[in-house]
Each structure stands twice: as C-alpha cells, then as structure tokens.
Image (cartoon, rainbow, N blue to C red):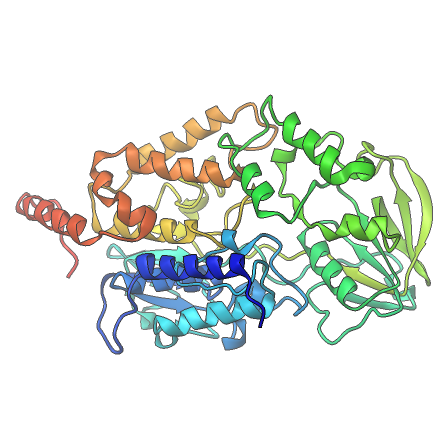
Length: 498
C-alpha cells in the first residue's frame, strides 16, 4: 500500500481531535441524569446530538419515523454513487469521526454515523417506527406524542431539510419512451451508452452527475430553470467563501465573483449568474461539470421545461440574464433517460407548539436561527436554514446541542424571550440591505459570530465558553451553578433537577 503523507497527517490530526474533544461514552446500563432530551430524527444531526448529550451525562430518547434502515437520515436514502461534495475536513459532525479520504462516499458516511450510534450506546435509546405528531408541555415538562414515552426537559428537532423525494409531474410525461428516475433512486441503474437529461440544477443535480459519470453515459444535458453559482470542490476556496462574516452581499462581493468567473468558469463564464449575487443562494459545489462540458460530454442549458416528447424534453432555452418564464428559443432536447434532480420535500415542524410560529418570529427567524423565542428549551438543529455557504455536518451540531444543555441546567445563562426577540430584530437591522430575509442566507463565519455574541453578551455564560465551543470543562461550571442554586433555592426561585 502506498504511503500518502498528507492523508497520514490528516488521520493523525483526526486521532488527536478524537482523544482531546470526544466526550466519553457512558458505561453500559448507566442511569443518566436530567435534563432528559427528546431528539426527533435519527439522521446525522440527531445521532451526533444524542452522542454529545449522553457523553456529557444527560439522558436522551431518539424518535425516528422510519425503521433502522433510515439511520443516517438523507444519507440512508441517496444513491450509492453519491458522495460528499465538500472536503471532509468541513464535515466533522462529531470529534470521533475518522475519515479515510478527503471526499468520502455515501457508504462511508453512513458507516461513520452507525459507528457513532453504537459507540455511545444509542441503540437502546432509539425508538424506530415512531413518527412524532405532537409535542406538548405538561407541568413544565414535555410530552412527545403521549405519556407512554415519558417526560422530557428539552426538545431537539433534527428532522433535517430533506424529506421525501420531490417527483413533480411534467406535461406529457407518459409519452416519453425512455426511463425516468428520481436522483435518489439510481442504485442498480445504468446510463451506459445513453443520452441522459437531468432536470434541475441544485445539489440533486450533483448526485445525478456522479451517477452519469460513473456509469459512462454517452452525453448529459442539465436542464436548469434557475441561475445558480457553481464553486469548485476545493476546501481552501470553500473555506474562504464561508469567511464572509456579514452573511450577505457586500460592496466587495464582486471580488470573489470575478475571480470565480476568471479562474473557474473561464471560457464558460456565460453560465455564471448575471444578476444573482454569490451570497444569496446555496451554491452548487462541483468541479467535474465544467470538465465534462469542455470534453463535449455534457451541456448546461438554462431555461424552462415545457413538457415531455416521445424522444426527450421540449425546452425553452433562455439566454443569460433572462428571468424564469421569459422569452427564449424553443427546442427539443433528445434523451434516453431522464433523471429528476428535483430535490426533496422539507420535513414539517408542525408537531411543535403553535406559539413557535407566531408572526414575525417564525422559522428561520428564531434566536440563533434555531431556538423559538417562546420556548428556549426547544432546539431545531439543521432543520430551519434556507440557504448558506458552509456545511450542515460540522462543529456547530455540538455547539448548538451544548447551548441547549447550558440553557437547561443554568437559569442565569438562559435567555429570556424578550432578549431573544431583541437579538432577532438586531440581526434583521444589520442585514436590512440584503435582498433576502435576514435568516434566509448565512455563512459559516456568521454562524460562529452568532455563537461568540451569544456567549459574550451574558457574563453568566462566560464560565461555559470552553464547554460550548469545545465540549470540555463542564465540571467547574456545574459546581458554580450548584452554588448559585443553593442561593436561588433558598429564595424559592428555582427547583433543581433531581
């Protein structure tokens, strides 16, 4: 086996991170203490959050609507040819994760999630085939569905942003003589020797493109209705773009946009959006599509789907800058296979109390985007964001989870609804020049700023800083809280968890 020094160093760093920052798995059959957390969803976020909770000694129950085959969330349902588009250094959803490559495939990702689930003894704390329909409060504690599931002190929603596949019906679809598949249903299929039409230009199109390349299709046509920025599959470039702490278009946004056109798009600069800013939408991360176009094996067409024909798609091909539904050149794009890269339905949060959705503080307009102002003991992790430049599977999962734990165990660190709303209003003011809503787009560095502000603004949270950001040093803050509790209990202000 060849020795790769960079990969060796990467694996050594992962080993060190694991030893320093991974919470210790609880012993078998141990009784964990309160607060007790209900985690809704057994995907990447739910399993990661649960492992953080039990690792720090707090009890959890995971509720998963599907059976055990759904462990891993969206990664359990995509095709085997799918893989991580961002570098795995930006996808460290738990300190103990150990990647064997820079861009792991779907099977490696599911394997890491499953190993984490088993390592922290979450099998006995997971209820499969249990769809959550209601979450309601009774005597200051939460009931999930009904009392048979017990009582909880906090709710952590981890239902994600990708649910069931979207499969829209297109006019004359029945007349098409070829095959039609959703991008998540490509296992066991082959595009060898076929002309493939991909409907959609987002993340699902990347999934489809990986399948097409791996199965050696004759040609590929991506039919995209919306303009979308494409950025290279490069950890350095992606990291730099995520460093825009303002989380919106600024007077300097033309610089990265121009550099992308000059060095990445190059001769294909007409495919770049002409009027949409880079920091307004989640970009497509892929370095292969332009290579395939330059080889003559693929084409990217901007326009509107009119309907199917027997041999392909009737398409209104629009020029750069022409809006959806605008004038264009109507043509038939021929193909033998159509892949519907039309994404997934967003899972509903309707099981939450109705006061979580009161105007103008509806998701994603929540405290740090994830805590509804009406209930600081509810956290919706990775399921309220709309668009971003960054990653959904990284350090922030643990930070959000530990913030919830801090808010539950330390009443002096707990934000009040009034101040949660003030923070939301302040963020809206700071991003008032954005063409989008304040929370409709953010970058990873803006997310880090939110965390720093959250800790810094309240002196009673300072003692928790190392715990929140790194997951270490919880013993001393808990002892301080215990002393504070003695005073508060003596004043009849708080009943302590037992």
